[in-house]
Length: 597
Image (cartoon, rainbow, N blue to C red; front, side):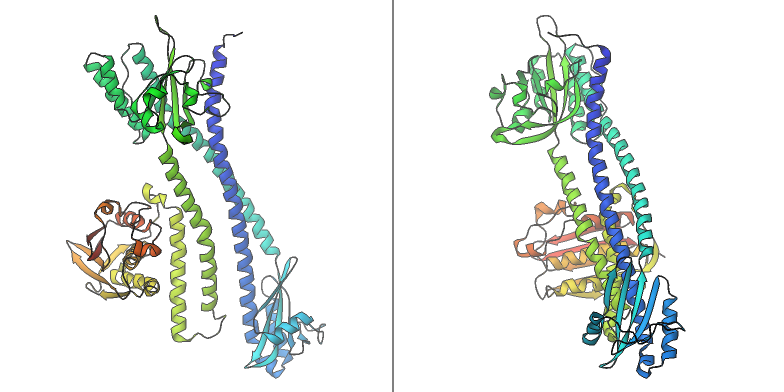
């Protein structure tokens, strides 16, 4: 009924198991790359089309403004010159000027073959009832019509037709470049998957080999602790166990005590999968007592890996398997994701072959990775696109599309435009926030005045503070003091600290901001009169996704990333950020930065 499997077949099985893991991870990476590439192409296409449309609107508005006097005086020669210049602009296919009755006065040519022809009724109705731009798309062309008024009097309008052919060329070029980047990303993903598989399974393989050596009575090699994760903890626990075994006489009771100290699950089964031994970590993770587990089959504790009927069915001819991701079946139908390695203990006199199953709980790691991915996806889709639209609208206001805004209005528009541009850069930085951890984030250092940065941060946060009836009080303690920092990054830190102070301030509270020198550093202190930071949360203030729970201020809660990002930035700038707090009195955050002489 059974036949012996050759050595080449064993190798094929072992390679197949590892290969499937590589293919699985690679497929996920490639799929993610394809989706990301498609979304990127779509977003860039929309951006190109939007930019072309905005350029057309702006040019048409400028031409309409320049033709006001000529239309008022019916100076056809001047109109022809202006419309002729418009026709010479890039991507302009056609241009005409018409009077209040919709009759074309000139098409910008000497022949002027379209003189006295009428624009469409729809265009005439729009011009007669509105001063807004009319944008129409027809195939590979876009037509923009702008009414021309003198006061409340309708003089007529100008109508420019633009070619979208250049847009199609740019879109095609963009698609090619994005596809190339996507292909590179996919290739790197496959390579990363292979390296990840090797990195994950190598330590577990070493544990299996060392376990076999112990089962044969041979000296077990010391395992290298390469990481600080679950696998690294397992290696440390195993090294500790073997050290004690070498130093003392091995006994069953002593081995039991060693196994109890292991944080990872260890299960010993018979040749048919019947569980003969478990360590306390298994009982804790599954919620099932040791007496209930003993005698059960391994398939009742571990879900079968994909493509197999049981965990032991996934083993190679040598009775081992490494780096299998599966689930531990806990009490109540719950499941726990685990990374499993299995090693065989060979038959000996009076003893049948048994298997050692080592399982590491990877649920927390998967949960954290999912949270990070969900956050990055949220920032990418829900922040970048609206922010781009807001910046474009403010840019149009700054360009005068809405007419004269007045001195104060223009100042506010400029502040809004500056802040929106800064926020756009900062959102991009958040999308690659992991670069801060690896030290690969780019910083552009400049020598700037510290209090100027503080004032800009306050200006950018004042609107947010006004929403909660909170105001800032600034004490210019170090006028003219210079620092060498990345201005945008420094403003981001100050904005985070100021926003945090506002978030935990009551209505009519004052957040004080003070600059000073302290121990050779420049210091910015931001103080609020909020509830203070609870004792159990103080060690977590600068952790990612950490948020203090206050029912009264829950509606003002942030993302939990501000302080984490601020600390990473300040560390890179050579400074420090810390706080002093008192419950019921308030909190003061201090930002220290080296002074630039």
